[in-house]
Amino acid sequence: MAANLGAWLCVLAAVAVAAVLPPAADALGMNWGTQATHPLSPRIVVQMLKDNGIKKVKLFDADQATLSALAGTDIEVMVAIPNNLLDLMNEKDNAREWVRHNISRYHFDGGVNIKYVAVGNEPFLASYNGTFDKVTFPALQNIQNALNDAGFSEIKATVPLNADVYNSPSANPVPSAGRFRTDVTQLMTQMVQFLANNSAPFTVNIYPYLSLYLSADFPVDFAFFDGLATPVVDGVNTYTNVFDANFDTLVSALAAVGHGDLPIIIGEVGWPTDGDKHANNALAKRFYDGLLPRLASNTGTPLRPAQYMEVYLFGLLDEDVKSVAPGAFERHWGVLRFDGQPKFPMDLTGKGQNTMLVPAKGVKYLPRTWCVYNPNAEDKSKLVENVNYACTFADCTALGLGSTCYGMDVNGNASYAFNMYFQVQNQKDEACDFQALAVPTQTDPSTAACNFPIQIAASSTSGGRRRTRAGPLGAAALLVLALAQLLISH
Image 1: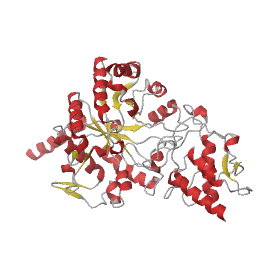
Image 2: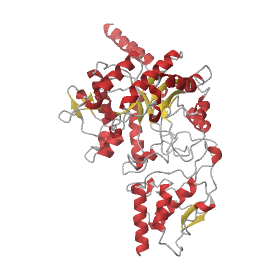
Image 3: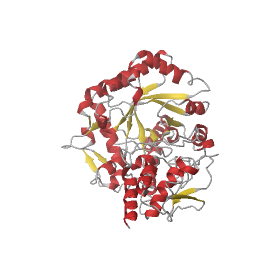
């Protein structure tokens, strides 16, 4: 009888835990970025979120069209204040006006279900050299106070931070030794106290992929969740993946400033699919195949075991004008292509089913016309500068070393560059000339590995941009130029 009673108590305890832990699908959110030449219409995106059962979304601004499309859906929303507005939010009146304009007019019954305000985006990133250090915390205070004063105390202001705000000393690189970076320790201590006082979460972006990208010595398997890596032992705790180790390093850093129990949101986590040798569909699938079941089962980490974790995947869609300063992969974080089509099987429920995400519906494309290199061009002497021009105003990152389109011949590389520009320019006739070096074609030049895309039509976008500068030339375009020079020399 005692044994039976003990078994029943275990069952009841399990039921009690299950009752307080939200279902994994409810915990999973998506980052919705819009740094694209042809961003999908917000209404198409919102319908796609609903079709895939995604109930949380994190934005990088408070765009009117986006928020209007989210109205009435009950999708939980994290709106955002970009870094370039933080200084303005240091004035209390500006913070109140921002809340009035971006919260009050949307957050009501039947309106937008706003849950968080992201104050900045990774403002303490070490590479910013302190640019936003003095303006972020006052902005956070003013926004939360303005929310409270407006009767929205249930909406919490938080600051999405890069994981570089904390670390472990090189002499003892284990999670239990985690501390905030010395240059921001005092600032982080104050901010954490403020978050705790307002029952607001700490938001952090954790990227196992970047650990791999930034260090040639990083053990590849430690970036994933399939238990193939050599474990890291930290006292009584053992770590088999960098995500858990990174998360618990933050927990230790929070504990060191007196708030080891502060709620933590994973603001961004994901794996890119192009732009680097480790950025591809196969490795992205491996990553998500490990992450999603863990979230579904509320596995937690060694320092926070069996805990619900609120997570926002990064990201929903590819963005072809994101800065490539960190790397060419930056434009390929989406679990969906730029047009809302899935890249690989992905089961958001974490049950391991071999299912594809529901694609965007109602997307209209430009005609099936491509722009390719003209091998019969009489004067090839200006091929270099024309490829340069194309890759300055379009995305050529797929051509880089280790990327999906790497390894084509000169004709293929030049054709890819010309076509990307042609599509960005909505297939205008004059966008496929390049001083007689290019010609339009109705024959798809795609290869088994390299897709030459057709851009979506303006009717499916929220307003395509013209001649948007895609950013620095980068390794991909330099490769094309080298090949073009080789062609000219022969």
